[in-house]
Each structure stands twice: as structure tokens, then as C-alpha cells.
Length: 218
Image (cartoon, rainbow, N blue to C red):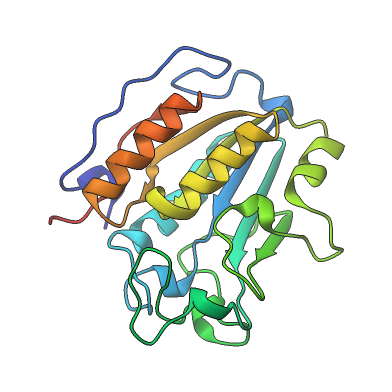
């Protein structure tokens, strides 16, 4: 699904702040965080979000067109996350098994161009983990520490899902002192109601929102 052909969009105003609606204020200290664009979260996966494959395909051209100082990705990487997995999930606190280490579902979607990605931050081996800031790179470094050590002050956040891991990652980015913009055209939401609630929470936290998320017709 092409993000430009989204159905049932949630319209968003662009608040004023440290980034502009059209681009980061200073790309020399801006990073792009690509959240959980994995097979299990795209069409055909065990916890698929409608429009995920289209978002995966659109992120690469955006990353190539913008002079980001750094590009990183996060991924769910579960081994045994306990009650996070359930045979009969409630889709609030428990979910079908997804993104299990060693399975195809944990891999990045093939439409995502991974060539610009400098580091991957894995999260949730033995617990639920929604925010990319709960993840660690290959050497054990956390996302916040990795970004700060490279002089990053601003982050753009894209990926899946708007109302879950994108939301949590953006909120944690604010808590860690970064100026945050979510590029909603490059996100896919699970449901209109939860996406609208997430956007309200992000606005209240001072996150800059542009565009509209991909949402399936209810």
C-alpha cells in the first residue's frame, strides 16, 4: 500500500518547534529512527499491520533523500517474553507470538532498504518492549547513549506501529531530551481509535507530527 493512497487518515497539524514541517532544523545533529519494520508486522506476518509493506518501501527513498547524520533501526527480538505472548491474546497487554529470534518473522521486511542503517537496537528478548530506547546494539550500548555519543539532538521517528512501538519510542525520545518529530506518512497504525489516542499523547508531550498515518478501513 502506498502511503499516499492511505484510507481513513488521521489529519495532523504541524506545531511549531525545533524542527520544521518540511525537514529537520539541523540535519548535522539529526538521526532517523526506523521502528520495527519487520516481517511479522507487515502483511502476511503473525501480527500484521495493514499498510506495513508500503511503509517499508517508502522509508528507503526518504532516508536517501534527507541528509541525516545517522540512521538506526529498532526491532522486536523475542526469545521468551513471558505474558507478552498468549495463545488467547487480549491485544492490549498480550499478543500472538511474533518476531521470535531465529524465525523469518523477526527479519526486516524485504521492501525496507537497510543499507543506510548504521546500528540495529534489539529489544524484548525476555520481556515486553515497545520503545526502541529499551533496545541495545550489538555491543550492548543503549539507543540513547549511542545517539548522545554522536552529538544527536533531534530525531525523526518512522515505522510500525504508530499507536504502539512508534508512540513508545517517540515518547521515550522526549524523555531522553531529544527534539522529536514523527513522520506519520511513514508509519502504519493498528486502529483509528488507538492511533488517535496515541497522536493526542504525542502532541501533549511536545512531539512534532507531520502527515497522516496509514490506517486500514475499519
